[in-house]
Length: 540
Image 1 (tube, one colour):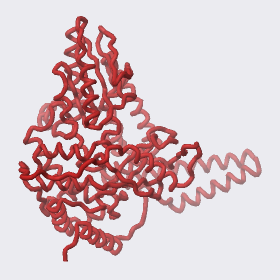
Image 2 (tube, one colour):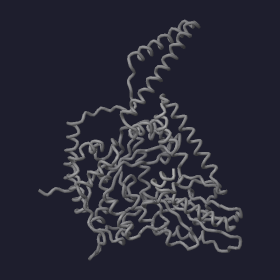
Image 3 (cartoon, rainbow, N blue to C red):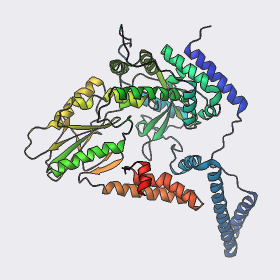
Image 4 (cartoon, one colour):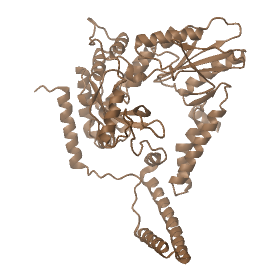
C-alpha cells in the first residue's frame, strides 16, 4: 500500500494526538497562579466586611479598624507571595523561573486586539478582527511565481544527500525548547520531548523520506500568525507585527538541514565578508566593531562619513520563489534538497489568530516564511551579492535584511560614489523585486566638516537624521553613545521598577537572578569580551 507523504504524516499526527489524549491530563494552569491559604482568605473577607461597615457608619473608629486590618492583610499577602516565589524558584529551577518572570516583566501579547475598518467602525468580534488582519497581510504577497521550477538536464550536485540519524533527531529534540504554542501540528512540542526516546526513530525515517521524495506534508506549509502591537494604542492592521508559528516537527527537521547547508556554504566560502547574519562567530557586535573602526579612521584623517541606512519593504515576504531557486541552483545544492525547498515554499497558507479565533486561510504566494528556521539563510543567499556590485570606495555592512552603505567624503571630492551606489542598489532591488522603502531609508552624516550632501532614491530625497538606531545601538552624528546609554539606563530603571512591583520576595538569590536575566543584558548589550573564557579565568 503506497501512501503519500501527507497521508503518512496525518497518520503520525493522529497517533500522537491519541497518545496525548490517553496519557496526559490536560489542565491549563498558569505558571504563576497560586491559591491563597485559608487564613488569608478569611482575613480578606474580614477586611471586606470592615470596609462595608465603615462605608455605612461613616465612623472614624470603624475606618481605623478597617485600615489596620487592610495593612495586616497586605503585609501577610506580600510575605506569602514572596515565599511562594522562592518555592517556585527551587521547584522549577532558574531557567523555567526566568521564563515565568519574563511573562510578567515582558508580556508578549496584548490583552485584546483593537481594530477599526475602512469606515472607522470599531470591530467587536475576534472573527472580524482576524479576517481584517489576514486580508491586510495578504496584500504584501505581490510576487507570485511566473514559472515552475525544474532541475536542468544532467544537473550535477556538489553536496551529498542530507540523511539524518535517529540519534541526531533525539539530540535535537532534547536540545530544543519546550513549547505549548498552537501550531498546525496540534501537538505541543513539550509532549514530543517527553516521548523523544520512543519517537525519534520514526521521525528520522519520515524526515529522510520527505527529503528523498522532495515533498513535505501540507501541515508544514501552514502558519498561524499572532498579531503583536507595534505601538501603545494600535487601531490599524499595519500597527500589528505578524509573528508566525510554524510546525514544531518541521522546525526540528529544518535545524538538521540548516547544519548541513551552513557547513556547505562555509566550505564554498560563499558568504560575503560584509554579511554578519547567519554566520558562525558573527553578530551585531562584529558588524558594529568593523563599522566603527572604518568610521573613526576616516574622521581621524579629516574626512566625514555619510551613512545610508537602507530599508527593504517587507523583505522576507517579497522574495520571488523562482528567482531564489535559481540562485540555489547556482550553488550546486543537492538535487533532493532543491526539490524539497521548492515544495516547502510552494502552496503555503496562513491564518491569523485573535483570542481563540482563527481567520479564513489565506495564500502566501511569495517570500520565505517568517518563523521558519531556514528562512534567514535563504534570505541571506538571495541578497548576498549586494556588496559585490558596489564601487570599491563604498563600504556595505549587512545583518540579514539590515543594510547600510557608507563612504568617506573629503572637501575636494567632486564625484559622489554613495549616490551611485544607491542608484545601483535601486536598480538591483527592482530586478530582484525587493522594493526599497524610501520613507524608512535615512541618511546620517558623521564628522566635523559636515559637507552637506543630499541623496535621492528615484528623485525622492532621503530623510536626514542626527540620531538613528543601528542594530540595537543608538548612533548620533557626533559619534558618541550618550543617547544610547541614556535610553539603556532608562529602560533598566523601568525594568527594575517592574521587578519590585511584580515580585514580593527580596531574597538575594532571586534578585540577583532577575538582575542578570533582565537588567544586566540591557546595560551590557554590545560590550564584547576579547578573551576566551579560560583566559578570562586566568586573568581574574
